[in-house]
Length: 374
Image 1 (spheres, rainbow, N blue to C red):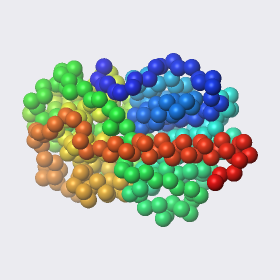
Image 2 (cartoon, rainbow, N blue to C red):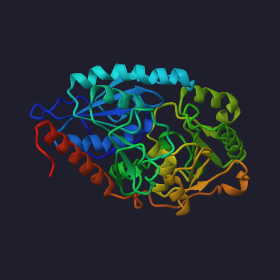
Image 3 (tube, one colour):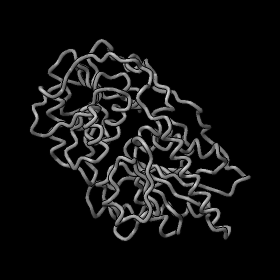
Image 4 (cartoon, one colour):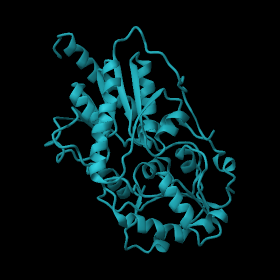
């Protein structure tokens, strides 16, 4: 086991018979498990029932198991081809609808699950969607009722497409990182020499609609740069099995020499980041997790840079690498001296989010009972 956390949930819980309020959380991708874990915990503390569905994509199911979540596996990823992707969204929405209808869901929550948005619209279930990247594509004519964003994101361009927008202080990683108890023995359990310079590397999200092929080329340049150094161990965390096979084949020699390590079992990335000397990521979540944990982080993301990453870059917590940069001059390879305790997080963010959700629930209950909001 590579992590521990506070208030561990029981895996097979029973619905609260005293409550007729059910909140539906859809875990559409790997980062959503960590993000929603404390939110689910807080909603259950309030006495609400929580229905959890999870898509078979990347490490979503494995992480849901690792976190002992009582989830229902529904649907899968349909690849990068736009037509299949669109068909897959609606097909999964049809798969989700019976579960939401059976459990009489009052409110739907997701971090950008398009299938849940579609299913909620057809079932007339109010939906709340969390986002922290303002350039994500939405579904034409089908919108969530409420959009929830970090306050540092400029909402002016989004107001035309969404009727109600809520914001919270900090970034999304501030919602869950404060409640984590991290394992300082992660490297030892992976058989990695802690005296080496440890680099955690996350490849680009090749199946995402915003993916730019430049990220893949930059990723290769980064790996080739890192593997030239004998005192560097790169822990690479592939997003998919296909990506894992490609990396294993292309850098077989480096894997054999243990200059590249791909964990064989599912691991909590937070522990790896907390044990690393630096992080290099082709996406968003792990980069921002490193920024919150105070670990030097470099982004090789080559699409439009969102407000959150711009904010972190301007505050010296994230370095953006462009395709034209000389990697050997930009990336600084050295051991990091730091305390393993978390000191940079915003511990009030989760409470803000919880209070907003409770207000929404109360408003919906009042509407159902015929009462008018004050």
